Length: 448
Image 1 (cartoon, rainbow, N blue to C red):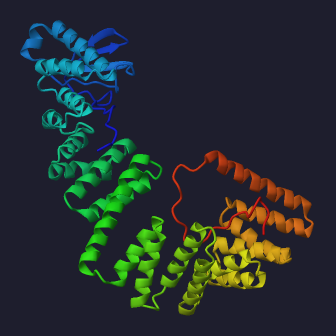
Image 2: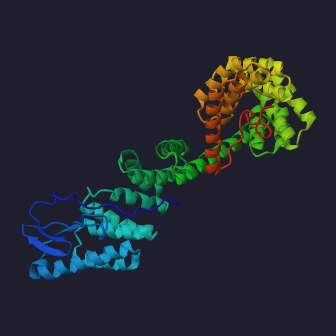
Image 3: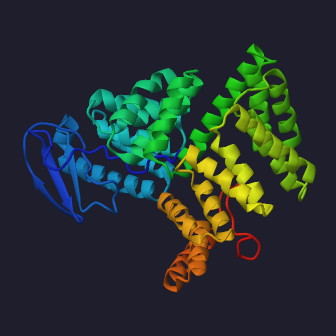
């Protein structure tokens, strides 16, 4: 499974909720005092482990054996508890098991002893062995916290997903403990997947992603699920409609995402052969051609073909801001500033919050000698994205052209801060393919 196993399940009742009429022995830092009340109870341990417990409360049974030799039984149970918890804290699971097995012999009707034994087995990865003591713990004391979740995860680990579901669903949807909820969610996602309940698995994955957006294990398992689900849907599409535009488009997008540009271009052209006016396809073909041009260090033919595809896209859909933007960026790099400004303006008109187009339009206006007109577009870009270092650099260029030295230095300082921060953070995972060409600082740091 890969999910971290729980190390600190609390099977205890809070202090002050000891069952009425029980004989209680309280140890405080190894100093024992006893208060006598009538009747029997169950062993109770407050505190996640021996080292972290200032007060250990044990409710001892008044069985016949205990009545005959109460001090011997109480002393043995205390010693066994200390041995077991110390061994558990030190990951000496075999020793912890032996201590709790002996405690189970002495206190067979105590749910907490069975629960702790089940936890020991769970920590060892002995999930099948954990089931019986956890079930017995719940039979003896159904209200024991977290035991139902631990039992459900044990069922899940041995492939008994139908038995696991009720406990996992309860823990995931009702638990207020983030660690337990996370772990139950990962098991629940797997159980749904193994039971072919794909929709339910996706719902859990989406909720896990919302609750734990920066958790690497959650990201791995949810990403794997989404990837597998997408693959299965594509396989189904290939079986149902092998010659459809949908399958060719899916194949083109998959190849493009993997950098297999020739295959992507071929698939997109097959789509257009079937449906020449399909919205978005000329744009995607243009992007693949542009990427191939870049890959080939400036393939002029591919770049020219890309420009034609973007123009064809605008004929089909005049509001396609991405196609207008790409034409504008190609014109800007070619030094055709009037055409660049016209295309960038078209993109911004169609999509006013288009950050890259706002930056492109601003820098084209600066290059064309109109810094005053450029500033509102660039300032809007940084309002949309305060981390846009290219926009701040272009703002500095506009202020320099206008003779605003103070504003220029302020924008440059922010640009340098963002650039340095980005360099410190680095890139752990490469960014996925962008839907449009990103604005970058040209050459050695000055705009073309």
